Length: 221
Image (cartoon, rainbow, N blue to C red; front, side, top):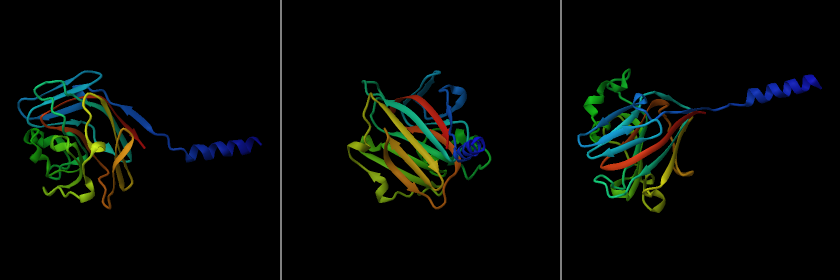
């Protein structure tokens, strides 16, 4: 009987695949800001506040490896400030720079937060509540500037809009050939990629916006 229990425990241990959760401090040491003039990014131990005029990307400095899940909680602010525009809760993930494959941040100063300067990267992208909160889009950037958009990835309607002054929980998972983007637990995009991007960098992306990131974590799947 003891030997049977021992074997059973070994099987359970072998079959289990415990996830490894890593909560990331929202401090400047962990993030790199690329931003056009007129905006600011403020960090504390508990939150990151982006106030942006003309374009901003804030990159998590560590390269991420699939299979992985990315979670963050964010509030888009609409309280009468100069950049309190409810739009563009965007992000990049699994980003790489084909022109500098061994040093992603080599061209950081050249990118400088201007949106067109990110079109040459390979990455996944969601523009949530873009075009003044009228459209939500998913793109797979292929590094060739054209940023193809499939019709089924061009969405509109209440589910795909930002609700201001409220916590929004975004979950992104990358596993095998599939990447999934969820808002508050609801699947918005599920994309099967025959040539998936399995490693790269995550970045918050916005323009003319005021938002507060309240938590960020990664979980190895």
